[in-house]
Length: 96
Image (cartoon, rainbow, N blue to C red):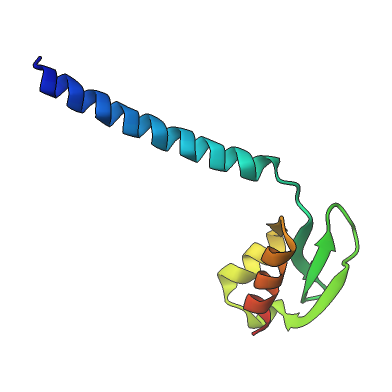
């Protein structure tokens, strides 16, 4: 194998390794972030639950039945929220 081919393979492997490390770090950061809220359903409406609470902190006026089926399904399962900004963004998305 020529030196040029070895050099190209080495560079290719370095790029793959750096991509792998970047993805691993991003996943690790999300995994260690503490869940603050869950966006879910209460009495047919969208509700905000604080982490591990049984009753909602806030009940929105938006009925889940008014949403597309896939979005309603996500809410019935519960959407994990890690920041206030993310929570506000989701509320705006669902209530506008």
